[in-house]
Length: 171
Image 1 (spheres, rainbow, N blue to C red):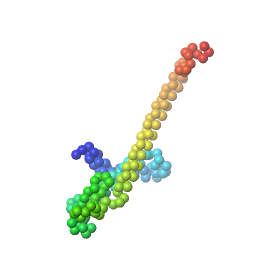
Image 2: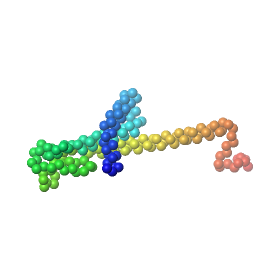
Image 3: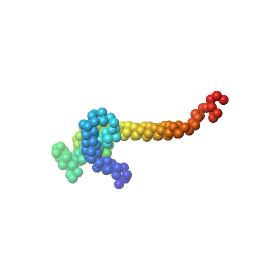
Image 4: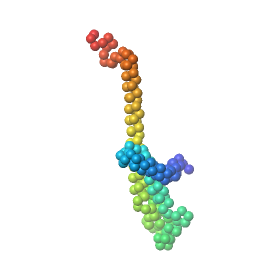
């Protein structure tokens, strides 16, 4: 099993928990603090969106019966039908008559748009959260630097700006 398959498995396994826990946190925050609290938590919104995309992916991957896929084709009145996997993305699974090029799609039409939309919202939420975090770290560093400068000035240290000569402006 490759690292990509392992990460995909972890994401799919964690998806329902992300939706339940993150969604519960968002609902609780919205009820307690108001709906504007959602704008202050882009990382949590990203987690819920990633979980939603994962749940949709699970729905698409398990849209055909795994034990006997021919049962799905028989229920569609295809006598000699087989289940053909179209790949991981876009998620596609079709019942196809032997020798035919196309067949009946088993994956619901909402699955692929939900996966794409959820991943876009997740990436955007994580990017906004990262940008806000970097801004907060920089602001804290500026505050500490200004505080240290003010403390040195309060101790009557002689601070000379870089553009003035050491002897003063009058020389």
